[in-house]
Length: 83
Image (tube, rainbow, N blue to C red; front, side, top):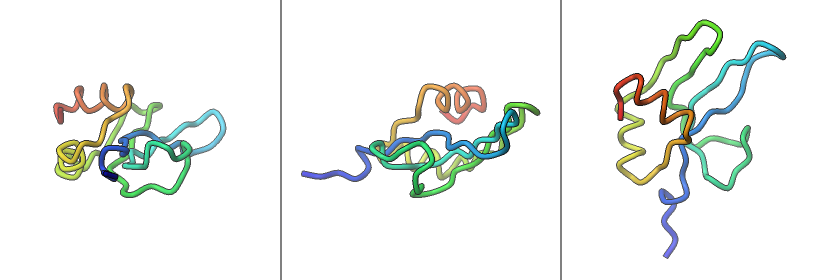
């Protein structure tokens, strides 16, 4: 049986200019490409300024539904004490 949440990932999509990365944190189908159409935007991360804004209730909701964060997003969520 198909479970849409089992194939969902929480990961970065790259935005910004060349040499100035900026990432959005999104929920997306695991089979989609990196910059594919997201299901939901969950926050952002700026690695240059070391700032982030996270929608903690939405992230916790997606994880409870079975979405898997990527390694990098997982480390960011642990640092922000969300997981």
